Length: 312
Image (cartoon, rainbow, N blue to C red; front, side):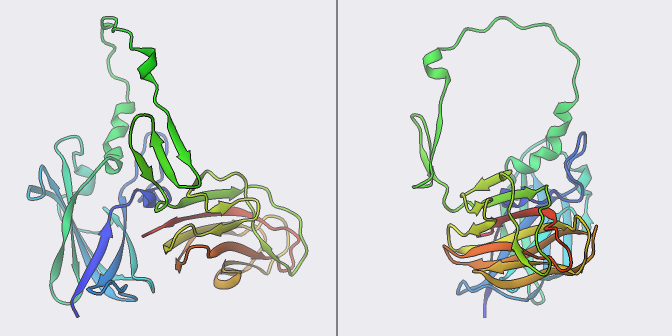
């Protein structure tokens, strides 16, 4: 069967992972996150399939000079056909990722995938705004102070301001005297629980959260801790947990449609921190997802975070 791949850079992925190094003062990520879904020619996901991926970054045009090339071997898609990589983390073939001069020319990414013996060209796309943050940090360094320029002509107050309006019912984003864009296909959220709450031992508790840092699509209800899928698609969820208080034998699980879907970690002792764990699943509109804590012999819920986004 002929196999094809549906793939593309997605800014949503960058919201939840920042490559080899986190954003901090004076530093930038060491890579660009990339996620794609592999499909056959009927549109069915290629599940649990071994592939190789080759990224080539070109300067100037889609056929321009190769400034960097790398290969990822032994990549395996998930049970939903998803695979995630960090551009810059592969085995270099040509050039150095950190030496790419993002400030000069446009840059293009060519993606090739090997399913059997030969690499298949999946196409070339232009890098847009997000990757150029790798260069933008240089602008934070103050340059020499130049002489003041001439006073500009004051603008018309009646035309300086434009307002954005978002209609939660229609999922439409509108700018004054401009276009309207529907945002119902974009879903991303992140919320944290910073205060552990008292509870009973040997109890399953749905984690609730403070006001979300991000809630595009309004899928997460932080008061109940339940995410409701606003659209059909493949979703990835990221969970962290810290076992505050005393008492062990705790467990963290992901529930889908009020039923156990996957155990994130079990036999968690007091003071233990569970770093980011990711789960990918296929949801229909209206399906619910929540993080459930089994308290074991502890009387504390613990703390942590819950994040997710729609892959496609």
